[in-house]
Length: 232
Image (spheres, rainbow, N blue to C red):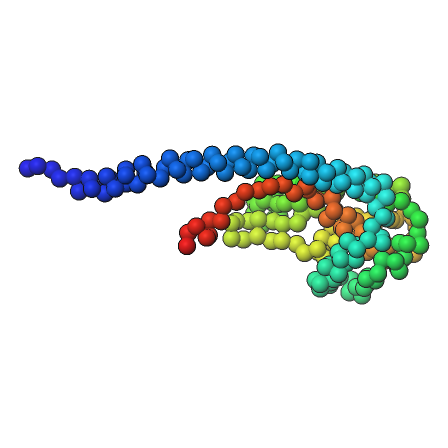
């Protein structure tokens, strides 16, 4: 009995289709890659200018982070943090409401040094929190207040699985990560308890805003084909 190739006609159609379009698609890829490469070369002066500006900003924050006290960026940061509800403190102490205008902060009437430097993103794929192993995303920084210097890590997100993750709000980061560290650094100044609490809060907002600026990276050309549109 003669065997029949059931897919012979289909395979011929596929081969004809590939012959018609594969070469054209490959040429399109080469053309797009060439255009993107040209754009990247043209944009280099702009990327370098951004990088130089950001480096100058980092240098300024490493000398005196107080330069942010009269900035729009700090006011916007305060407003954004305050969109999240304050945490309930374990000792039931009333939560201080920070003044939305940094010009009225107690910090403006104290002249001790404040600086931040050495911002480094961190990823730990083997983190464990008494529940299970997971991946953490965050950063490490070094801050100086008066004559005290400390380096510490901040976790902004925990990823347990592709469908389960835990992200921390700006207020949680400011109150749980920054305030305790800063409070410890202020102790040698022998401040009154209410004064130390207020300065800890103000410095937490100030340095939290500084971290946001330190995390900025230059923007460059990124080519992404609109897959969703292509599928339709």
